[in-house]
Length: 193
Image (cartoon, rainbow, N blue to C red):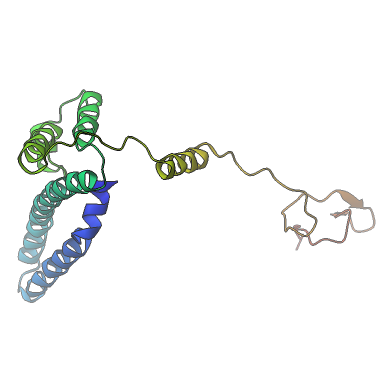
């Protein structure tokens, strides 16, 4: 959570949107290129180059959010080593190593790099404390609420007569040859035209 709070505090989303707008404005002169083929080639090149550029910005944002997140954890009394432990668990689950092309398009730095940088930052800027917060009642409350939301079952349908429904007709009207609803509630029926 500290990492995500750091993204908000550092205004990373706003910076990314601003850069995207600048990139869109940079493509405006391509409209005035005389040849359609040149315009198409330039447009394709921009569409390939811009995402790689923005991925670099994203990696920098992720590194900054890691840096700030560790400090937020420490200042609130939590053990910053838990940040490292989290990335170690993610690394252990990530059995497959992405290829070179996958790394080029990855928006996050590699987990091993994040672990080593975070450990170095903890050692450099955060003195150890004799005691850290393990859990709080508020944290336990939030965990319980999230678990309840995750495990919530589908709502049980009610038999409320005022609730609109699409239902099959049940009564047969022998004079017109069509089925009519058993009660006066509106029902979706088909017409023979």
